[in-house]
Image (tube, rainbow, N blue to C red; front, side, top):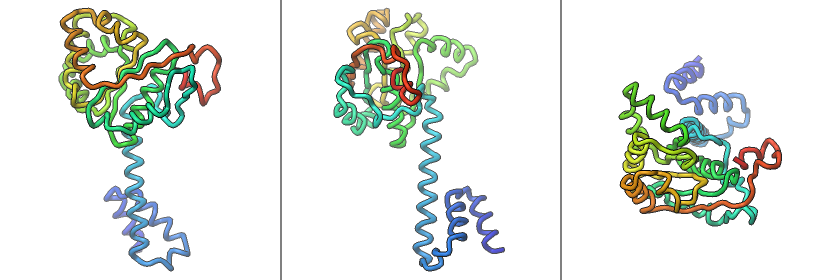
Length: 252
Protein backbone atom coordinates (compact mmCIF):
# COMPACT_ATOMS: atom_id res chain seq x y z
CA UNK A 1 0.00 0.00 0.00
CA UNK A 2 2.80 2.40 0.90
CA UNK A 3 4.59 1.75 -2.41
CA UNK A 4 1.37 2.30 -4.35
CA UNK A 5 0.99 5.67 -2.63
CA UNK A 6 4.62 6.55 -3.40
CA UNK A 7 4.16 5.73 -7.10
CA UNK A 8 1.03 7.84 -7.28
CA UNK A 9 2.79 10.77 -5.62
CA UNK A 10 5.68 10.49 -8.09
CA UNK A 11 3.17 10.66 -10.95
CA UNK A 12 1.54 13.72 -9.40
CA UNK A 13 4.96 15.35 -9.24
CA UNK A 14 5.43 14.44 -12.95
CA UNK A 15 8.54 12.39 -12.12
CA UNK A 16 7.68 9.94 -14.88
CA UNK A 17 11.16 8.52 -15.39
CA UNK A 18 11.60 7.91 -11.70
CA UNK A 19 8.15 6.29 -11.50
CA UNK A 20 8.94 3.85 -14.28
CA UNK A 21 12.38 3.07 -12.88
CA UNK A 22 10.95 2.36 -9.41
CA UNK A 23 8.35 0.00 -10.88
CA UNK A 24 11.12 -1.85 -12.68
CA UNK A 25 13.20 -2.06 -9.48
CA UNK A 26 10.26 -3.63 -7.68
CA UNK A 27 10.26 -6.45 -10.24
CA UNK A 28 14.03 -7.10 -10.17
CA UNK A 29 15.10 -9.45 -7.38
CA UNK A 30 18.74 -8.37 -7.60
CA UNK A 31 17.85 -4.85 -6.49
CA UNK A 32 17.48 -6.03 -2.88
CA UNK A 33 21.26 -6.43 -2.68
CA UNK A 34 21.84 -2.77 -3.60
CA UNK A 35 22.09 0.00 -1.02
CA UNK A 36 19.50 2.75 -0.71
CA UNK A 37 21.99 5.27 -2.14
CA UNK A 38 22.66 3.10 -5.20
CA UNK A 39 18.98 2.56 -5.94
CA UNK A 40 18.25 6.26 -5.47
CA UNK A 41 21.09 7.15 -7.85
CA UNK A 42 19.58 4.89 -10.52
CA UNK A 43 16.15 6.46 -10.04
CA UNK A 44 17.49 10.00 -10.35
CA UNK A 45 19.58 9.07 -13.39
CA UNK A 46 16.50 7.69 -15.16
CA UNK A 47 14.52 10.84 -14.40
CA UNK A 48 17.28 13.11 -15.71
CA UNK A 49 17.70 11.02 -18.86
CA UNK A 50 13.95 10.96 -19.46
CA UNK A 51 13.66 14.72 -19.14
CA UNK A 52 16.53 15.24 -21.55
CA UNK A 53 14.89 12.92 -24.08
CA UNK A 54 11.51 14.66 -23.75
CA UNK A 55 13.14 18.07 -24.12
CA UNK A 56 14.95 16.95 -27.28
CA UNK A 57 11.76 15.56 -28.78
CA UNK A 58 9.98 18.83 -27.96
CA UNK A 59 12.74 20.95 -29.49
CA UNK A 60 12.78 18.93 -32.72
CA UNK A 61 8.98 18.90 -32.93
CA UNK A 62 8.77 22.66 -32.42
CA UNK A 63 11.53 23.25 -35.00
CA UNK A 64 9.28 21.83 -37.74
CA UNK A 65 12.32 20.87 -39.78
CA UNK A 66 11.74 19.69 -43.32
CA UNK A 67 13.99 16.71 -42.53
CA UNK A 68 13.82 16.16 -38.74
CA UNK A 69 15.67 12.85 -39.04
CA UNK A 70 18.67 14.44 -40.79
CA UNK A 71 21.86 13.89 -38.79
CA UNK A 72 25.33 15.22 -39.53
CA UNK A 73 26.70 11.76 -38.73
CA UNK A 74 24.93 10.50 -41.89
CA UNK A 75 26.34 13.22 -44.14
CA UNK A 76 27.26 12.06 -47.66
CA UNK A 77 30.75 13.45 -48.21
CA UNK A 78 31.66 12.08 -51.62
CA UNK A 79 34.25 14.26 -53.30
CA UNK A 80 31.83 15.14 -56.11
CA UNK A 81 29.54 16.89 -53.63
CA UNK A 82 32.15 19.43 -52.55
CA UNK A 83 31.60 18.76 -48.85
CA UNK A 84 34.47 18.30 -46.43
CA UNK A 85 33.34 16.29 -43.41
CA UNK A 86 35.98 17.84 -41.15
CA UNK A 87 34.74 21.33 -42.03
CA UNK A 88 31.09 20.46 -41.35
CA UNK A 89 31.87 18.68 -38.09
CA UNK A 90 34.11 21.50 -36.92
CA UNK A 91 31.25 23.92 -37.56
CA UNK A 92 28.63 21.73 -35.88
CA UNK A 93 30.79 21.18 -32.81
CA UNK A 94 31.88 24.81 -32.64
CA UNK A 95 30.33 27.83 -30.92
CA UNK A 96 28.42 29.16 -33.98
CA UNK A 97 25.02 28.92 -32.27
CA UNK A 98 26.05 30.65 -29.04
CA UNK A 99 28.03 33.24 -31.01
CA UNK A 100 25.05 34.08 -33.23
CA UNK A 101 26.81 33.31 -36.52
CA UNK A 102 25.14 32.80 -39.90
CA UNK A 103 25.68 29.65 -41.96
CA UNK A 104 25.19 30.12 -45.71
CA UNK A 105 24.60 26.93 -47.69
CA UNK A 106 24.58 27.28 -51.48
CA UNK A 107 24.63 24.91 -54.43
CA UNK A 108 22.55 23.64 -57.36
CA UNK A 109 19.10 22.14 -57.03
CA UNK A 110 19.04 18.67 -55.50
CA UNK A 111 22.56 18.99 -54.07
CA UNK A 112 21.34 18.43 -50.48
CA UNK A 113 21.28 22.02 -49.14
CA UNK A 114 18.05 21.64 -47.17
CA UNK A 115 19.12 18.28 -45.75
CA UNK A 116 22.48 19.64 -44.59
CA UNK A 117 20.85 22.74 -43.09
CA UNK A 118 18.31 20.58 -41.24
CA UNK A 119 21.11 18.32 -39.98
CA UNK A 120 22.90 21.34 -38.50
CA UNK A 121 19.67 22.60 -36.90
CA UNK A 122 18.85 19.13 -35.59
CA UNK A 123 22.28 18.83 -34.01
CA UNK A 124 21.75 22.23 -32.38
CA UNK A 125 18.52 20.85 -30.89
CA UNK A 126 20.50 17.89 -29.56
CA UNK A 127 22.71 20.42 -27.78
CA UNK A 128 19.65 21.95 -26.12
CA UNK A 129 19.08 24.88 -28.51
CA UNK A 130 15.72 25.88 -29.97
CA UNK A 131 15.30 25.98 -33.75
CA UNK A 132 12.66 26.87 -36.34
CA UNK A 133 12.39 26.11 -40.07
CA UNK A 134 10.91 28.65 -42.49
CA UNK A 135 10.68 28.24 -46.26
CA UNK A 136 11.23 31.62 -47.91
CA UNK A 137 8.90 31.06 -50.93
CA UNK A 138 6.03 30.75 -48.42
CA UNK A 139 7.16 33.61 -46.20
CA UNK A 140 5.13 36.33 -47.95
CA UNK A 141 1.86 34.47 -47.35
CA UNK A 142 2.82 33.75 -43.72
CA UNK A 143 3.54 37.42 -43.16
CA UNK A 144 0.27 38.55 -44.76
CA UNK A 145 -1.71 36.22 -42.51
CA UNK A 146 0.10 37.36 -39.37
CA UNK A 147 -0.27 41.04 -40.18
CA UNK A 148 -3.97 40.48 -40.86
CA UNK A 149 -4.71 38.60 -37.63
CA UNK A 150 -2.52 40.80 -35.44
CA UNK A 151 0.04 38.14 -34.47
CA UNK A 152 3.03 39.53 -36.37
CA UNK A 153 4.64 41.33 -33.40
CA UNK A 154 4.32 38.27 -31.16
CA UNK A 155 5.70 36.05 -33.91
CA UNK A 156 8.60 38.45 -34.43
CA UNK A 157 9.43 38.15 -30.73
CA UNK A 158 9.36 34.35 -31.06
CA UNK A 159 11.77 34.45 -33.98
CA UNK A 160 13.99 36.88 -32.11
CA UNK A 161 14.38 34.46 -29.19
CA UNK A 162 14.83 31.28 -31.27
CA UNK A 163 18.43 30.05 -31.10
CA UNK A 164 18.64 28.79 -34.70
CA UNK A 165 16.43 30.10 -37.51
CA UNK A 166 16.61 28.15 -40.79
CA UNK A 167 15.59 30.17 -43.87
CA UNK A 168 15.31 27.64 -46.69
CA UNK A 169 15.24 28.19 -50.49
CA UNK A 170 16.13 31.87 -50.57
CA UNK A 171 16.17 33.41 -54.04
CA UNK A 172 13.61 31.10 -55.64
CA UNK A 173 10.95 33.80 -55.89
CA UNK A 174 11.10 37.59 -55.82
CA UNK A 175 10.08 39.58 -52.77
CA UNK A 176 7.57 42.40 -52.57
CA UNK A 177 8.35 45.52 -50.55
CA UNK A 178 6.48 44.36 -47.43
CA UNK A 179 8.17 40.96 -47.34
CA UNK A 180 11.55 42.56 -47.93
CA UNK A 181 11.01 44.98 -45.05
CA UNK A 182 9.79 42.27 -42.68
CA UNK A 183 12.68 39.95 -43.56
CA UNK A 184 15.10 42.78 -42.77
CA UNK A 185 13.43 43.15 -39.36
CA UNK A 186 13.82 39.41 -38.71
CA UNK A 187 17.49 39.40 -39.70
CA UNK A 188 18.24 42.65 -37.87
CA UNK A 189 16.82 41.21 -34.63
CA UNK A 190 19.14 38.22 -34.91
CA UNK A 191 22.38 39.72 -36.24
CA UNK A 192 25.23 38.94 -33.86
CA UNK A 193 22.82 37.53 -31.27
CA UNK A 194 21.16 34.42 -32.65
CA UNK A 195 22.28 31.92 -35.29
CA UNK A 196 20.71 31.84 -38.74
CA UNK A 197 21.06 29.21 -41.49
CA UNK A 198 20.27 30.30 -45.05
CA UNK A 199 20.10 28.01 -48.07
CA UNK A 200 19.96 29.17 -51.68
CA UNK A 201 20.54 27.99 -55.22
CA UNK A 202 21.83 31.48 -55.98
CA UNK A 203 25.52 32.18 -55.37
CA UNK A 204 25.93 34.69 -52.56
CA UNK A 205 27.20 37.26 -55.08
CA UNK A 206 23.68 37.38 -56.60
CA UNK A 207 21.76 37.87 -53.36
CA UNK A 208 21.88 41.66 -53.60
CA UNK A 209 20.06 41.54 -56.93
CA UNK A 210 17.51 39.04 -55.59
CA UNK A 211 16.64 41.19 -52.57
CA UNK A 212 15.88 43.95 -55.04
CA UNK A 213 15.89 47.29 -53.26
CA UNK A 214 19.48 48.51 -52.91
CA UNK A 215 19.22 50.15 -49.50
CA UNK A 216 17.45 47.19 -47.92
CA UNK A 217 19.80 44.74 -49.66
CA UNK A 218 22.85 46.57 -48.32
CA UNK A 219 21.45 46.54 -44.79
CA UNK A 220 20.37 42.89 -44.92
CA UNK A 221 23.62 41.57 -46.36
CA UNK A 222 25.71 43.67 -44.00
CA UNK A 223 24.02 41.95 -41.06
CA UNK A 224 24.21 38.47 -42.57
CA UNK A 225 27.83 38.70 -43.60
CA UNK A 226 29.31 40.20 -40.42
CA UNK A 227 29.95 36.73 -38.91
CA UNK A 228 29.26 33.84 -41.25
CA UNK A 229 30.37 30.43 -42.48
CA UNK A 230 30.02 29.28 -46.10
CA UNK A 231 29.22 25.76 -47.26
CA UNK A 232 29.09 25.36 -51.03
CA UNK A 233 27.70 22.08 -52.38
CA UNK A 234 28.37 20.74 -55.87
CA UNK A 235 27.53 17.85 -58.16
CA UNK A 236 24.45 16.60 -59.98
CA UNK A 237 21.05 16.44 -58.34
CA UNK A 238 20.70 13.52 -55.94
CA UNK A 239 17.07 13.26 -57.06
CA UNK A 240 17.98 12.04 -60.54
CA UNK A 241 18.29 8.42 -59.50
CA UNK A 242 15.55 6.87 -57.41
CA UNK A 243 17.04 6.51 -53.90
CA UNK A 244 16.41 3.94 -51.25
CA UNK A 245 13.86 5.08 -48.60
CA UNK A 246 16.52 5.69 -45.95
CA UNK A 247 18.54 7.87 -48.36
CA UNK A 248 15.68 9.84 -49.84
CA UNK A 249 15.97 12.82 -47.55
CA UNK A 250 19.70 13.21 -48.12
CA UNK A 251 19.01 14.13 -51.72
CA UNK A 252 16.66 16.97 -50.87
